[in-house]
Length: 271
Image (cartoon, one colour):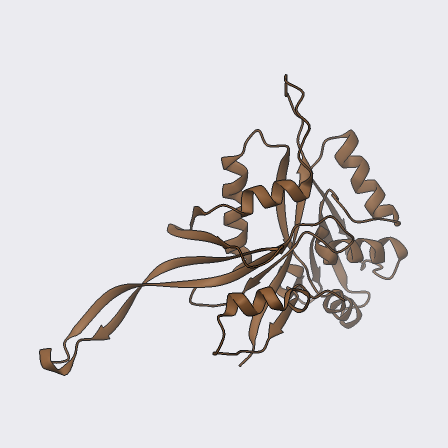
């Protein structure tokens, strides 16, 4: 059975700095290596999770896990009586921290016994931000989604889409040639915005095939934000429900974290 890894984008948004000693800010790559190369713990829906990094590659590889109580039975000599014991379940995580056109991407193993990947990594990143309130960067994590799922929704509901909303994260690396990327960069640099939301509404139906909409969809589905839409007949769309993923063939003869380290390009869906 193949093992699934969900894909997300990490956006590092610069903060205003008040460094009286004039220390140079770390690069985004340096900051990611700093905060994800140390063990950490965080709370997620009332449960304590632990993150433990591993020294298996130049990328950042580690595990995120939590304790679980296992129901089992004791040996026959003691009557096969019911018993409980604490165990641990963990998911493998890998990050490409480098600044390139498709970098600063994160892949997290999907294991329902650990939890929902997006909510777990969001809670972890929120904890990192709270632990580093004066750091040079604020981190946002957004699912990378499949653009074709939106276009399928738009085609099936052509002329019937009454609401279309884009929640953009100000860019930190998209080499941007389109107007959306440049506009978000200006909002970040001039207005100091970390997020920008644009919502379109029309009872008569929104035209979704324009260049502006196509640029916005491309920007968000690469991990630069999220899309929600609604069409007549109470039909709904959310890019959060269409997270991109890759699969790695299972091999029980080798620890998963070592196979992930050996197959970095495949797990991070690089060309």
